[in-house]
Image 1 (tube, rainbow, N blue to C red):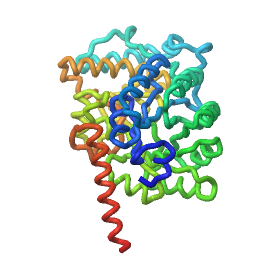
Image 2 (image 1 turned 45 degrees about the vertical axis):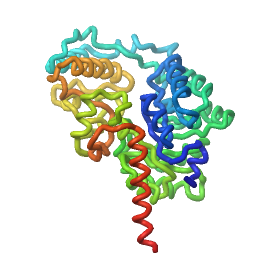
Image 3 (image 1 turned 90 degrees about the horizontal axis):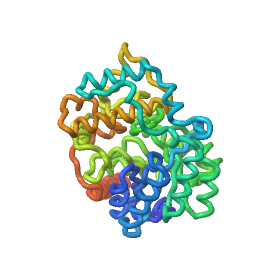
Image 4 (image 1 turned 90 degrees about the vertical axis):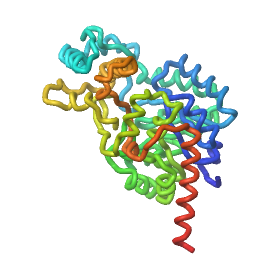
Length: 374
């Protein structure tokens, strides 16, 4: 495809697939799209294993890595560790969480509730993850929260790897371009995970217009995009391609559970919620009994990031294990980060099939639009 972003990263079709699952990343890239591994949840050792696997299974096709290095939140592991962070979680929050799980048949002692790590948000950890990423033949590296750190920009230049950054406002895009990023991902509020408040339909042309005359950095559209026709529409708005996430959660290769995929297929676009009840920052998820409880009158209130994650992460791991083990009573708690585009997903298929569907719908949309100018 004659497309600048395709030329920059080496893919055939400018469909970027963000996923925490290496199988999805490799499958999308093999099918002509561009898989991006969400690497922030891994230790450097785990990321090395994941990227080595992708290298061996991507058939030489290009792929990228997304590493979260927050601009306004960094935890110095020499000053704060996970145990100290856990001490900041009140008995009331522990008790509330344990009682909520018990209501759905999941028994846990409040004192044994917390697990997981918070140090993935440390700048030092981000640097270590970058050390790993740049040892592999990645063709893109992205930062998801705030301005891409100078070291990421510098390493990208050194290794010839474009740097992408996600933004939720035109002002953020201008700051990212000034910092030196190569690709802007304009993510609307329809997106799953951490997102802003402006819709994709408004945000994409705002960002494209703001950058015109300032920079020729290409813009990818993100937020609620699960079909090729939506992708074509966003490119008509000035985007150079699409950055997607939710649609891959309903693929056979995804890391999501069968129970969650079933809920995805059954969900409408109104079944998501932008909530702080999972990470401590506003993020869009599939609404569940967990969110209803944390927003209820008896809730002690959500904690900030990263403390809230130390509460929710082990809780959701228990929920998934319990449901997989046959506890149907816990299904109302099942949730994951998902965008409003979930309402357009009506089946579970392979990642390669999703890429093929995107391509066909994109072509169909282009043919339809061509009729208006003939």
